[in-house]
Amino acid sequence: MLTDVFVHEKAICESRSVGPGTRVWAFAHVMEDARVGRGCNVGEGCFIEAGAVIGDHCTIKNGVKVWNGVTLEDHVFLGPDAVLTNDFLPRSRRQREPRPTRLATGASVGANATIVCGVTVGRWAMVGAGAVVTRDVPDHALVYGNPARQHGWVCACAEPMEPGRRCPCGRLYELRQGEAAEAGE
Image 1 (cartoon, rainbow, N blue to C red):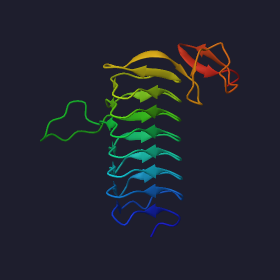
Image 2 (cartoon, one colour):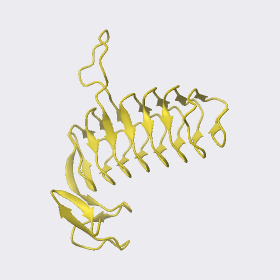
Image 3 (cartoon, helix red, strand yellow):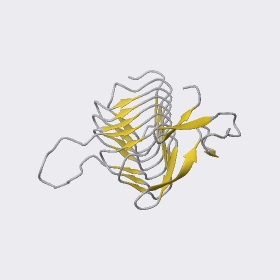
Image 4 (cartoon, helix red, strand yellow):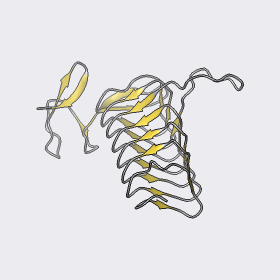
């Protein structure tokens, strides 16, 4: 039995690697050998496959499937029915290793967005609802559309921001090699 983990009576949690304070809601299934960090919220109807890695304090809204080969670092947000994939050339009868996909610390993915396998969504980046992400997303980038294209930058607090100008929350960012980074990092 997991200690300090809430598993709804209509959920299945086979993994023994679920951190304290995590909540697994009705009709969710966390497979054995999946890793889920501390303080996470796994919404109704979610599926976490064996081999998936979820960091601390992640929010996975209803209907999301996190497959083998997908890594969510800390503080990642996945909106309702966001889609993650792990096979770039799928065929029913062929087995292949999953193509790794990484959502870096603080990344947010809007409802119904699709993240094609093999990409990295950068730190504190934001993917708009319904977007189709087919290539890497820089740190702090705001992307949306099909295919997703960058339309600006976002602060770690989620406010739109412009590198070189102070965000209303007080953080200051600068561009370094095409990515926004907090001044002094």
